[in-house]
Length: 190
Image (cartoon, rainbow, N blue to C red; front, side, top):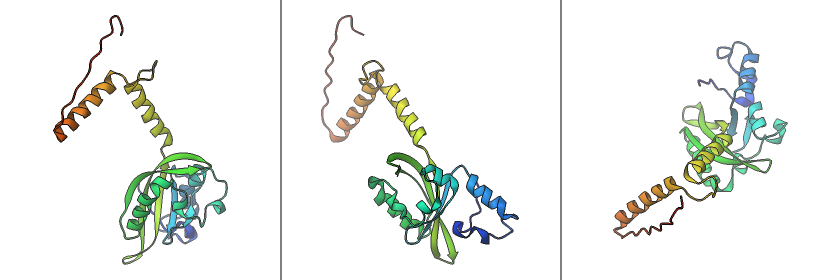
């Protein structure tokens, strides 16, 4: 995806060369299939498109403007996202996954920070592009569970056992320890 981004907060000032008609730019921004948001140097959200509002299950931009970006992030992800945000304000783009609370529900997002250079070596804001990947993550977990656990008993299956033994052998070799496996056979039991 190629995006020409000017300040989201000052959309009316977008040069006519980027989008000859302001309505085209506004339509693109609001109908993009991802959340596009702007974060000021103090860490506060200054703009967000309609898709972002829908992702957060909000009705009005006033509900999110001025909020600290990190206040939305799950506690276990805050230190990592804060570090990435600081790096973005130093001019480094980054991609990451994180969890976010949306009306009490924990959702998983894939995002990136893109620093916007105001003038040479001076970054006052970053643009974030975020996509909700909760359903994909849930599907991946379900597929993993189906591949590694018995559907009837919900106990680890042979594939899971083989993988566990392989990992235990690797650790035993690495730490120069022994490893014992006990095999119990039950007649006429599959």
